Length: 191
Length: 191
DNA sequence: CGCGACGTTGATTTGCCTCAACGATTGTGG
DNA sequence: CCACAATCGTTGAGGCAAATCAACGTCGCG
Image 1 (spheres, each protein chain N blue to C red):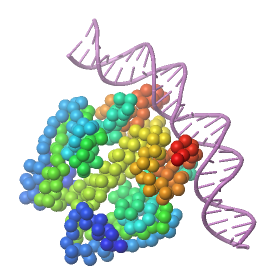
Image 2 (cartoon, protein in one colour):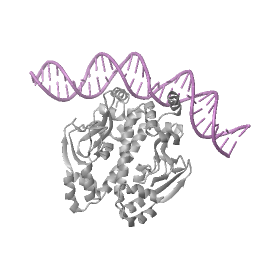
Image 3 (cartoon, protein in one colour):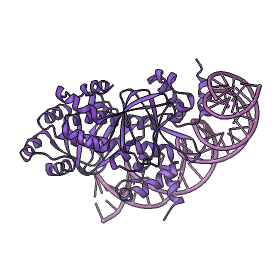
Image 4 (cartoon, helix red, strand yellow):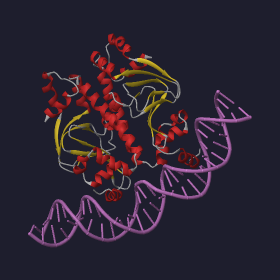
C-alpha cells in the first residue's frame, strides 16, 4: 500500500532505506465508496491524495446544476484542489470517487514536516508537478485546437481503456459538452 | 540579474550562501527583441526560461494560419514547452517575445547537474510547478465556466494592467476568440 | 413491479466564426 | 519629413457548431 507510493517515488528519486519507515506515518489511508466525496466545493481543503486504487473526478457545479469535470485521476496520480491546498483555503472544486477508491492522503502541514525530514522528496514532487503542468499545457491546447467532435475522437484514441471505465455522461462532462451532443456523435461514429 | 532569480528562489527555500556563486554559471543570460522567437514549434526544445524582464507568449499555429496563445509569461515566471523540455523532444509550441525581453535559460542536462549540486533547489521547483499547476486547473475551469464575453470581463478584472501591456489581437488569441468578436465586445462594454 | 439513473432523438435557438471590406495608426525607406 | 505599406482595429452579412428544451426508450435496482 505505502509500498505502491514508494515504488512511484523510487522512479524519480532514491530515498535512503532508513527513511522508508519514516515516510509511512505521514500518510493516512482512506477508503471511499463509489459516489463518495473526498473534498467538497465550498469547504476547506488541506489535503492532497495519491490514488492507490480506483478513480476519482475533480469537478465543480455549474450554474445550471450539472457537473463540469476538470480532471480524472487514477492509480498513481496525485489529485486535489491545489489552489486551496496551497493556501489552506476554500475549495473551488469537489472530488468524487467514481469507483470504489483507496488513497493515501497528506495534509499541507504534515507534508511540510515530511519534506523537512526527507528533503529528497522535493525532487519527487518537482517531477510530479512538472509533468502535471506539462500535461495541463497540452490539455489547454487541445481544448482550443479541437472541435467537440475532434475532442471526442481524440479522447477515444488516447484513452480507449478509459471509455470502458467511465459512463458516457462523465465523458461528456470532461470534454465539456452535453450528453445529448455526445449521443449525436456516437450515432455518427458507431462502430 | 542572477540576483533576481536568487531572490525568487529565496522565497521558497533557503540556499547556503556558499552555493550562491555555484548556481550562477549554470544559467545563460539571453536577450530577445520584440517578436523574436525563443523556441520554435517543430524544433527541439531543451531549455526552460526564467523571465528577468519583459513578456513572452507561448502559442501554436492553428490550421487557419493564426496563433493560438496558450499562456503569457512575465517577470519572475518560468516558461517553456514542458512536454518537450522533459523528453528532450520536438516542441509543439513556439515562444515569442512580445516586448524586448531578458531571460535566464537552463537546459535539462544542466538543470540535472545543478540539482545534484544544490538539491535544495528541488524545493523551489516543487513550489513553482505546484503553483503553476494550480493556476492551470483554474484556467481550465474558467475556460469551461465562462462564455467568451465573461472570459473577457473576467480577464479585465483580474489583470487590468495586462490590458495596457498587450495589443488587442493577442488578448483575443489568449482568450480563444477572434479579434472581430473582441471588437464587438469592446463596443458593448465601452467605458 | 415501479422508480430513478442513464441514454437517445428531434426541433429550435444562439454564441461565435468566417469572410470581405473599410478606417486608423504605426513605421520605414526614399 | 513625407508617402506608402503594413499592422491593427472596426463593422456588417451570412452561416454553422453546439446548446437548450422537451419528450421518450431502456436498463438496473430496491
